[in-house]
Length: 330
Image (cartoon, rainbow, N blue to C red; front, side, top):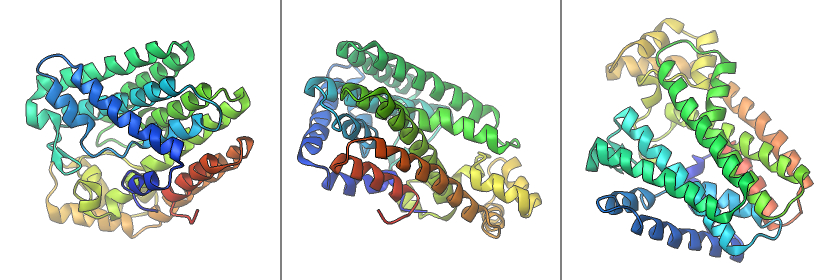
């Protein structure tokens, strides 16, 4: 599949139209203000988490969606800051649950400050996100993001429960729809709502955001098996070693050497040799090709739906983002 989408978002920011680029810069300033308002003892961890190298993909999706209409500037910045604060909160809490030591090549909040401070920092960012949305004053936005937050919580719990256990494709898709795709969808819907787009156009953005989120997670699944450690910010095979069922692993179990793959999934802290054997067993099948085809189908349908939206730079960039995640030329 294409480059990891989060990593390629830096290039994306360089081609944004002036108004969108200015809005992203405004979000950066707003996030610094969010950290500055944190309770004493949480200012430093909040600022570090918000500035830890995130590519602002979700705010960019919200901004591009909104600019296909006529959003109010302050509402646009506030909602965009809220989606990034919410995303960062989930990353912090995920790292606490996973006992992750590093993210994006830097110590996680839980590693640097301890479990109690990390949890409190994530809680603060959740609160800040919804405080900002309340300031915007649009009940639909609050509901959109509340549903996404509930979905992420349920998805994370489901992933924890299903660790090292067999998972059907339908269950996996539902899990990533909640855990990853929900916030993509929420950002696109929020943007369309703030831009004053029609309900039909907002529905198209919702479909696009969800499909992009699914493809984004599946791309991450593939990169876990074939990517470069420096690019991913984690070792190759991390998901497999942790017993996390991903789409290529599910496909590989259907046609490959299930004995080796299951041995890796069922073994806590597998040896490098066992892990390598498991990765090779997956790559010896058509699992990667099937995963790429699955993601491409989702993205093609979503891009087709974007034709309901105004033709222009913003729509073209949304199409390019979708093509990027599945490795197609835009």
